[in-house]
Length: 237
Image (cartoon, rainbow, N blue to C red; front, side, top):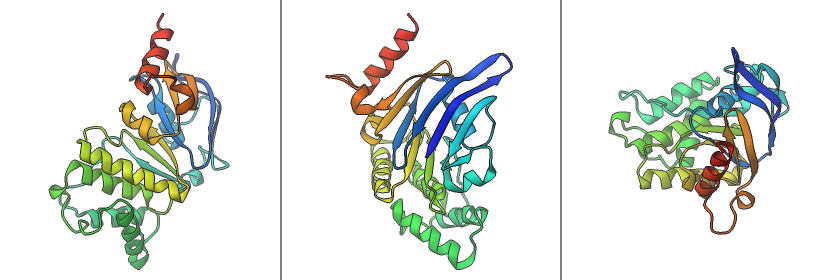
């Protein structure tokens, strides 16, 4: 689904991403991990076509990420997405549906489908002002899923949620496995990543230190957090 081939992104003399190569397979749940400033956001912005690599190639579903057509396969939930308080969840979804060319009955049917998927049926006509943060995240996730994308990119989707909200988002992601969705998850909550994702890549100073299955990376009695700290500390020795 995704291939990064010797990808570098420089801002002046600074290499935010430094000659990275790896692949993410169809149906894989991949966690992109790293401290602030590691280059994770730059990777996400290149995947979405917001910025172009300085060198190297990014391929999404067989197409260059610089080709606008590649984004028809991608759904995206940003870290700080906002739903205007005066809109209902359904109104918000219908506005997003219009952005992908759906209108009328087609838009309503597609909105109804994602409401079911994110467990927000029965709540869709309430104004966003009445939603909990977890409910807003589920509506945002539903908006990212409109049009049945093959790749879902989630930037810190559970930050700030209480345990119930975290569990609700985790349940939605687990259910998406049945649809063969590929997920790229950017998160600092490593305990949750360990429960949700198949594979992980740890970034630091623009480089990938390791990319493998979580079962392979995490050994013996370690947690993913232990592994993360160990790799970062080793780089700083």
